[in-house]
Length: 618
Ligand code: G6P
Image (cartoon, rainbow, N blue to C red; front, side, top):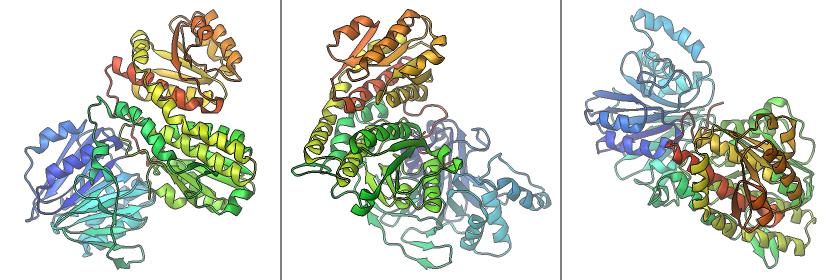
């Protein structure tokens, strides 16, 4: 959600913090701010509504200081504005705080702190929940506690999940960080005579690859050379950092106009990397060395539930399909935010698979927590971020190898998740003896063609641009699919909403005649996902019904499918794929269509309005 950075060292903190925020801007981008403290304890705070470039101009005027914290915001409490942007200072002006997460009991805490403010003749200066944190700390400082104790006390008073960075004028050589619950990570980067703090690795990589991830309940006291972690039970230790293996070049946009476009083009590579060594043919095996679930667990599974949110939910829907069709066992999918509040019945021997590219989505983590507490069912996380909270909560993880994804709309992590789910289906089917070596070989050989299916789909970029030119101004789209293409229709509609701001609905083609058909007329284009397969004839019937209402049809089908191309108004050919693998051939085209429509509308594709890449609030 929001992005947090911190710095303590010998350089001017402002530009370093700003650069870090630029690398985290995908987490939130409605306002931002930076606070720096110089050696004498002089504090300067600069905050701006809008994109970081607005802050960039403002910080030129800022005095320098070698200690500071910064924040890029995705508003929860209070509209985006200069006054609601972080950092927030205590009314005493001594304490500054940035936060990611929600202080669920902020009203209660505001009421409690009101007397103190009234006595001082001060008032709240923002509408945010965060502002109670510096105030709580300040109150404890006045009562004589150390900053570390005051921060620990304040964090202990908060309800909800919070990631915090803080600093104090009276202690200009240190910054502090705290993590409570699953409000996204906090990672500390070790430099040479300087230390960094960030919500996520991309902000640290230009400076260091030596890092330490805070655990739930940790408070970090950081100076230019060392870190001390204080845990909830008040014990302290010096953490041992680890080396991360991430290439800073991977987070550069290179020659591409947008990160999203770059990441669409990276998909064949992301897929090959994710599959590499996990789909072996002689003898055939899937995920042989990569899934740390005991074989007895795999053998005893009687049902699989796949959960996720957003694009990951659509991957989960396709994963459900594969687990039924490939592994041959009952499977279902669920929206993680609905699942846990339904008091779901899991039954014995259910495996829960949580799909989350970030590994931080609070709805998905909440569902995983529910499963652990109420059912104790085994859980597998499918995520792109090693060491993320989802991997900690799960019994086993399949880590995608997609590299960092910066574009807010998920692309390469979607196909990566698909590959992981397909491999998992093969693994379970194999463990349960439902896939003969011959069939398993066949399935894996098919999966190995996925990178090239995606590659060839990407080559349809120009055709997608032509269609986007023609329909870029449409106000609505209906996207139809059947079978395994139904979740893709939903994903196509989601992409249109996310980056093109077009109203789009993804529907199962068979459902269209039960309502959505009433919407159709010449102004309402319909995208039909219609590769050849068992449901092709039913799909063409739906297309006929659309055409009869004079709505323009854009069909995405197999290259060279003359019957289909003659039936519809516009046709985009993709490489023919085996029936279970059409998600790989169709995905790049639905992504490129949405991308091109957004481009014709002149929109901010990598940072669409109101969205954030990592959603750590409910
Ligand atoms: C946000 C992102 C989406 C993503 C969803 C789930 O809404 O903008 O791209 O699909 O969160 O995220 P996750 O990290 O759990 O896959």
